[in-house]
Length: 121
Image (cartoon, rainbow, N blue to C red; front, side):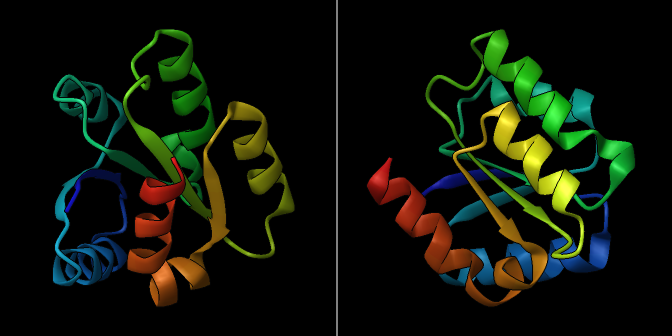
């Protein structure tokens, strides 16, 4: 279905997300830092999935920077945050993410939401 680059530092959760998305037919590559994310965007994946829970990743700032540089013109963005961290959600929305969801929804509905993002995109 779609090629996905997933910036997720939490290996356990990243593996769960990758497994769920792969089961739905998506090709998922996990990356653990901003530099690797930039490298993989050169191949213009359909979706960039970003962990907003891990503050060390600076996910919202990265997406804002990538968009300003024109690196996301053919790539949709989906970020997930801790449901109690309203500031992370607001930062991501201001940064221009296409979809921002709680981490719990990513775990439960990630494949469906990703597919909907691609169809509505």
